[in-house]
Amino acid sequence: MADSRILVNLQRCTGCWTCSLACKVGNDLDDKVFWQTVRTLGSGEGIDRPAGTWPDLHMSWMPVWSESCTKCPSRIKEGSLPYCVYNCPNAALTFGEEVDGEVERLRSEGFRVFELPAWEKSKDGIVYTSK
Ligand code: SF4
Ligand code: SF4
Image (cartoon, rainbow, N blue to C red; front, side, top):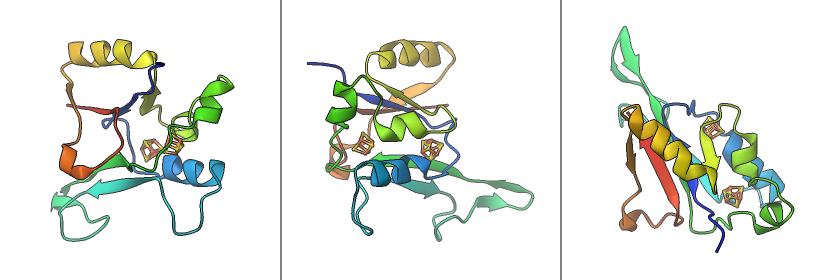
């Protein structure tokens, strides 16, 4: 079976939501339906609130794929990347056979590699890297 993993480099993600919207438009999803969303990791007190105290503020993001994600089989069949991966403007997402090499490269630079726990019920084959 073809490799359909998606690698997310959290160090490159700027929380722009382009991946989520590209999925929505590409797959013609209803207004309230998202197969992939982007979490803000900030102070925990509300969406898009930074952690820390001024001027040492920081915020990061984590794209999350739901079980509804199909991994875009029609795109793969035509030799294209999934909408979310193809449209990320920051090259934060890597797909398929490219994943192993990118994981190796990032590990050598001190990145850790992990997946979400099962209780998150997210899509299989989503791998994260972060420092
Ligand atoms: S993964 Fe890419 S497209 Fe998605 S929020 Fe992060 S930077 Fe934006
Ligand atoms: S792989 Fe395809 S279906 Fe899954 S989130 Fe990305 S664009 Fe949507």
